[in-house]
Image (cartoon, rainbow, N blue to C red):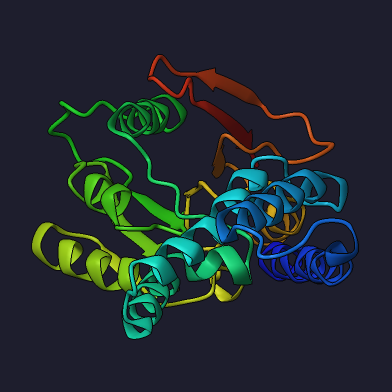
Length: 258
């Protein structure tokens, strides 16, 4: 069961318990009961049981705030179509969170500079060189808004800078940026993306797809190529190197030499 569906089931279960409590409470305390108090119980119980029922503990904040969001919307008499529209927009941005369990993570400039340094180190390339050099094919699996693709396309040693993205709005924005500044982005599932033609593959996904992705990397990428995972290591596999960056999030790059 996906985390989104599990969260929804938890909310329904807590609501059923709360409804049963409201049904029997008149035998103890006479109604009416303040709506805000019932919402507080719903939110608190949903948050408390989320960790116990398999959701990551940070989901308890989502579970706590969700009932309050509905309560405030009803209190302010917000048009339901506005809520539906916001939901559609959020889905168009974060579609992969429910399908692949991969949130929209964006790579910062410090990490991009580290990736550039890694290319220079691994492939013995000097950016300032004017001599003909062997050029690199770069792939960003889940490229988000396309920032890495654009950055790599502007490096003289990178011949091909590509990315794949399936969330609709990030994909359209990535296509727009790359059309202006270089690189190419495809609306393609990363699992259907061949990796055999790429020397350097980068991913900033989540813990969920890493075991399967590592099998794909091992079976498709050629010897001498490099796979880099931002923040999420391959389980039960020792990385060739770990680079700890000095940015605010203290990014770790897990580097695997094929």
